Image (cartoon, rainbow, N blue to C red; front, side, top):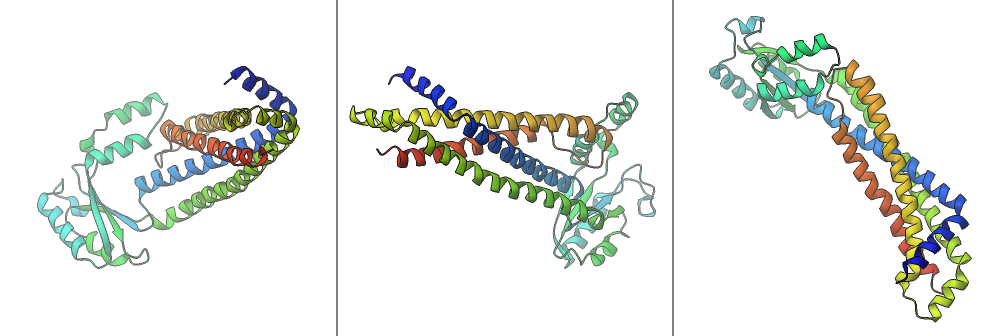
Length: 306
């Protein structure tokens, strides 16, 4: 296979279809950026739910050595008190399931959420140890509207510091997160379809412009792959540029909005991090390659039969 011809045709094809190639790149860029934002919002919703709990959960915080409520006059919760609390959770008809969160788990979540660039705050945070945290029961409810029974059953038990129910506070947050996530994905889906159609139209125009060369190559016995390769490489170039622009945009969003704005100023939840950004970029890279290469393979099989 003569790669010189392939790269020559790649350059010629990009020159012939500059406007169409730019249109494909822009469409891929915008659609993949929206998909990436939707993935980040989905990851953020999971982190918020992991930190605060879902609308189907209440959290029962147990006493530690620093607790001062009436149920904690004897200090740290005892094993017998925990057994009594667990017995109430097992027998209550409103409870679907429950799990115990250890002090170390609570500390790890707290460290993930509380990020600050202030030196004084950093020293305060560093002075806190896992032993200072509270154990807690995360209780999954069968019905989010039926929680008063279990709440009243556990909040007066010895060893229970407080019972947290943030469902009404968190409901609008989760609602708007879901609206933005699905809105971004819905718009991105339309743009992905537009990108696929544009790729197909670009291949059709390119095949028509090269119909004489393709006919000659068929007559001299050139393989289908050899003829298809310049078209595939044109699509690959467009996909790589679109993915790169989307990746840069997502990383800029992570740096400016998440790391420079939200994480230093708001510690109400663990925010998405670079790992989530890298995962989103990897996902959109696969989508970008698929939505250009697959239509190209399909279209070239159709339009190159001359």
